[in-house]
Length: 377
Ligand SMILES: Cc1cc2nc3c(=O)[nH]c(=O)nc-3n(C[C@H](O)[C@H](O)[C@H](O)COP(=O)(O)OP(=O)(O)OC[C@H]3O[C@@H](n4cnc5c(N)ncnc54)[C@H](O)[C@@H]3O)c2cc1C
Image (cartoon, rainbow, N blue to C red; front, side, top):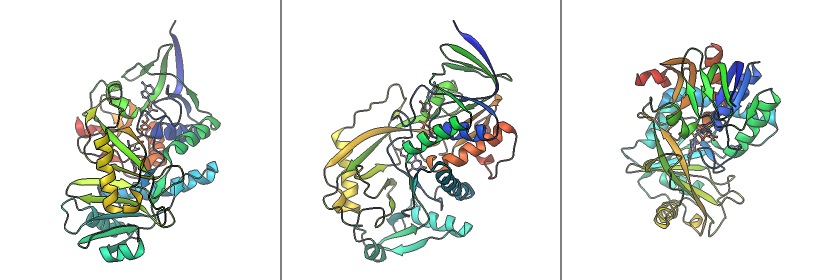
């Protein structure tokens, strides 16, 4: 029998990276929170697995994100202090590309930094090779190093956020949401319960398009990630090598220094086949591994040893590559954070804070108006 449960507060649908941060931020402010997700924190079926996520502040994608990246960096530090967990490694991040590359990875990063006074170093290829002998950067390339940047551990983050949210009073339940009735008084349906909350926060990552009945123009893409065991580990650890991005002729790759048990990880950001969480092909083909190995061999020859592991992950893409964050135009009591287009993990604690603001009618500390779902109405 299905039970009706009134929730004098908020139901959070999906407790991955963003949803668990929202549950914590809401519970911290005294809101009654029921969080629903059938999968355990740190699972590998969505968008928040793989041990590392780059955290950059000088945002080449669009400088409008920089106030968000700056605040997010502070919130990561605060989350570490509060939890006692080490989540963030301040390795720095270097972006590399041929001078004049139409992708503008390096100049756009430099411009975003200049506009907001962020510390970066613009380097020629020879200077990069001097400083990071492991990097094989051809003459004619340029780079920008952001020393105050690095990477976070997504699985550890989600587990930490679940623990803190529960401690703060959030009721997190292993249930699958089957449908949401959108309206002034939303209804959230699971197999055993009809929840009647005041507000809904929808943070179901790549499952969000279906729960939104495809009413927002979102697509899901399959991404392949590979970790390699270096042939020579010297100079590849995070104390000697920053996280990296390379832009070349439209292809954007990124990766991480050598970590214990993790090898050197590399993946390609652009492209990927359209899919759904239910139908995605989780098998990684040898040619996909070889393409990533070739890219790694070009940039860090000593890192491109035997394959350690390869797996898939999902991006939820919006048409413009910007997040979809705010009340739904057809149901303002439902606040969504999705369409994160493969770049939201660095914002996780900030997105939790912003979602709590939007639920409680407070003004977010940073401008998020440009991310509103209303832009697709
Ligand atoms: C390979 C890869 C590399 C990336 N690299 C970076 C990076 O370097 N830097 C960066 O900032 N970002 C990066 N990203 C993007 C970032 O990781 C994502 O934007 C972020 O993890 C999205 O979090 P989420 O909470 O939306 O999704 P998820 O963490 O996937 O959470 C969605 C949750 O919803 C739950 N759910 C689904 N359906 C239901 C249902 N019916 N009922 C209840 N719950 C449900 C799922 O179980 C899941 O736990 C990367 C992403 C990928 C895939």
